[in-house]
Image 1 (tube, rainbow, N blue to C red):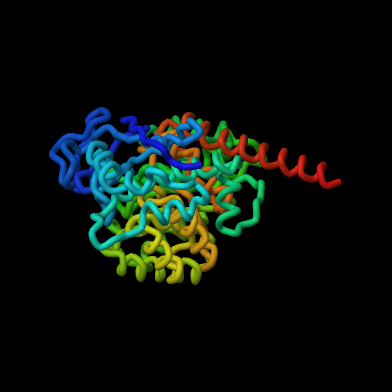
Image 2 (cartoon, one colour; image 1 turned 135 degrees about the vertical axis):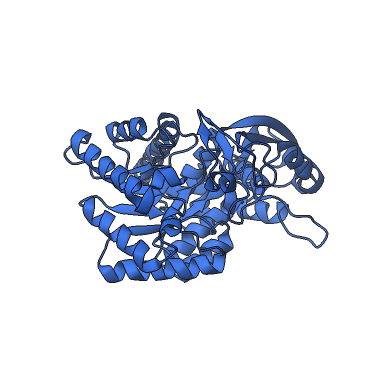
Length: 419
């Protein structure tokens, strides 16, 4: 099996690209749009519709396999790649990658990626969004050639046991918090609600607005959840604890510990409690925060996101135990193989692995991420794309259900054949 041609399909991400710097500086939300001028290079407005670019690899048996390129909601922030531009991405593939893709023999996924993305002194930088989409197509192409699922192919190539076990799913609310929290509870989502605490009015003076929201979510679960329903409560605060408490680790840890005790028996996750200003400072600050929380006896967990973007970043945070869980934000990591390696790096250092990504992704990239999460047996994965709960949760949970049932059926057939 080899690659004979390439097709490009402009598309739409399931949410929007937002200028995080402008929002942090106080841009006002008017309806669904933000007022004011963008701050981050590449943005023409503070909120812009997410765009994607599909790449279809035409195989010599006539099959076309696809991957989608896109970036994350907060592109250009905290060391991330700039805002995704589909026309320039297509040109990069045509000029730099197509000579390597054309006639490529699809004997193995890792081998194919190594060949296509091999660095050279003369080769310009290939954006991570491009690597993300092209590697999705390559994973699908090799699994098609091998006549197996993407999860089976990953396990085979990375020497992992094939375990047909469900990975917990984390859903995010967007700004429609109250309605979407109720949706999550009724659907019995494993981890909820994210909350999108990305502006000062959502956190409140001293964190009081946020505290009330956390307590409201816990009470809502108690009121409307089934008797045996015990979801993890996971909130992304986009660094606002650091802003509110002057990045004082002791004060941040005390605030988190208090919240964790208040929502018991539910487990509390706090994502991005602070932004310490650089990757090195973030690693040091989060390591101290983990130590302070554990010293207090709290079972609340810190989830790393900002400034932990690439595989190299994940490895450094994991080695320093700078956080309890790392979000592996797949478009920021780039190649799918690097996301797989990032999960394994977390596991090797005793850190939890959250196979994440962005609301700005597509259904195609979300389905690929399910195979990565199940194959590596990550601790949790994101219901994506979009911010409406129903759509992303349906895409990810159904893909996982189909995959697990297929793996179980194949295992049963193998046992019957060997009996």
